[in-house]
Image 1 (spheres, one colour):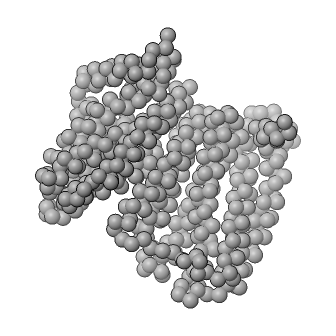
Image 2 (spheres, chains in turn cyan, blue):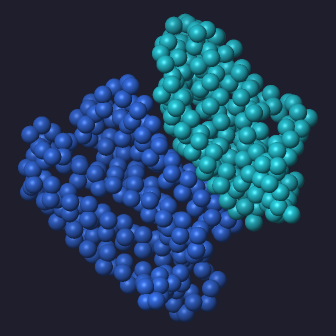
Image 3 (cartoon, one colour):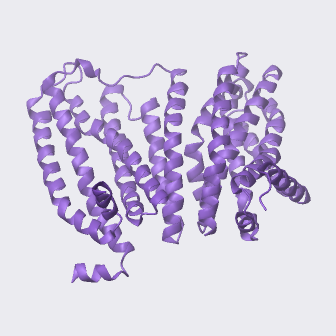
Length: 226
Length: 244
């Protein structure tokens, strides 16, 4: 029997959320990684706040990009290993919607918390308090787009023996636009300007991702499972 | 349906193998001929540029390489899509054969660009939008080849890399646009040569060189395609007949 795609997506989301909260350490790891990366920059660059503020957009976005890459490993791999993805594919329900639900949960558990915790790291890098909300909004939206792109590449590397480095090699070039517009929004926020144009473009990338990425991810996962 | 019979023949590895063997020398001969004509026109007949002197002549390699680096990527993506949609083995083999050629064209573009940049801009590397998107293109090629190499099952590797090539084609314009935006905030875009100012004696060798590079691509693609087919079909009976 074919259930409505939204009902299926809701079930998958509930399942993934429940599983994730039973393994909280896995949720914290990308956040801790992000914090450590943000700490390394003052140590390697300069402790001087005014110079750190110039580097802050790059530091925050590269940190976010790398920690989202790290979290991407968890998106499909465990479910592929224990056969859950295979059951998804065989269930006769829409795999596209199921993977879209998984991607949304992945963002809720990694991209969104990272955006919410980023002000702590940002304050340490000399980002003024007025810029925080804009920065959080840009990181949250950009993180969603990153998760969508990551769903495709994580699906593609399912069939590979060792996914780790390959996953980065595939994901990072595709993430260039998000990095460019996201870091630019943060820079603009620090300087006190409007981030509306950058947010609109990030939003456009996210919408394009919502429409195309789940389809490509479903195709990729099916190939990986064959 | 005469139009479809020729298309179906391209789905047959033995036929394509023979086709490639027949056509490769023609492409090769024409490419070498066009290249010699263009080189003579570009290096001997064309006058030196009034500003860049003889350094401008690197454009005869640089511009065709840059065009090919992108044209090969789209060829690869189209071949990959054909392979994915119609499940044509030969199309996947063609896509696999395209990747290293395109990657080398990209390297040639970057290399000649750097050699030209040193005397002209005073630096081998400038974060110009075109240079940067070309570099990202190289990473896309490397990622494509990395994915192919990373998956053991050849059919899986074909399909997964095909999806990646298609995703890359959707993303390439966005990457190019984002890099242009990013750069426009930091420094004025550096113009290469104002093409409208070029004299005809400089332009025609360039046009011939474009043609030569296309032919060269066809030539190398056919050779690589044959090698790819031999490797993939090594257990098929037609190979024994062909090689006997």
